[in-house]
Image (tube, rainbow, N blue to C red; front, side):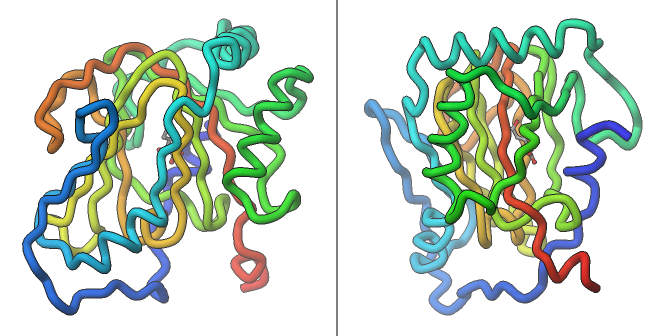
Amino acid sequence: MSVYCKYFLTTSPLKSLKIIHSLGCSVRRRFYYNDRPYVSFGGVWDINLQKVFCKDMQVIFDFLSEKDEKSLVEEAEKLLKRLRYEYDHWDNAIHGYRETEHLHWNEYNMGILKRVQKTAFHSETQDMKLVHILDLAENGFIKPHVDSIKFCGNTIAGLSLLSDSVMRLCHTVEKDKVVDVLLKQRSLYIMKGIARYEYTHEILGSNVPNLMNYTVHKSRRVSVICRSMPEMDFHQR
Ligand SMILES: O=C(O)CCC(=O)C(=O)O
């Protein structure tokens, strides 16, 4: 079974998390980085819901230096080079990708991953030790999905290497509630709580129009993804 099947295919999001619906004002609020919006909301959003959402979906720009990025890419390349990009399986959540998992990183990269751990996870034991490496070809994209609650806990933390891209999150029930988030090259995103359970997420293909109203050209993109352990009670059920 490929790694993506394990993490992506499930998808019944937890029902227990509550969304705040009350005021229902129409908002299209934007957040800026270097004079450009990096997140844009589409549809009708309550302001409190926006606040909760932004707490649960954070992007830290320039988390990596160029040296960090090069070092991670070099180690990832060694593991990926014998794999072929996969396309066109009818049930795939991803198009144009190759992937692997990695445990024993070199010392420098382990230092970076420790920093991800400290930033994204509450305790040293919360995150899985196996790190997922996902290489999306220039024409690759990830379709909307919610990560499996069987294989992944509350938090997903991803480093974006080699390219900018746009992650779109869409409410699983109120389909017009959409958020586009710019994942800058060398940034870290931390998705948890309602963003992780109540919204599908996807990586848009290159040059697909987004709510931020400027073109984000996605070239080949490698992501290094750390996930928290699945909830204990899932396995006890
Ligand atoms: O490549 C990424 O950063 C997104 C991966 C993804 O969709 C996931 O881990 O569920």
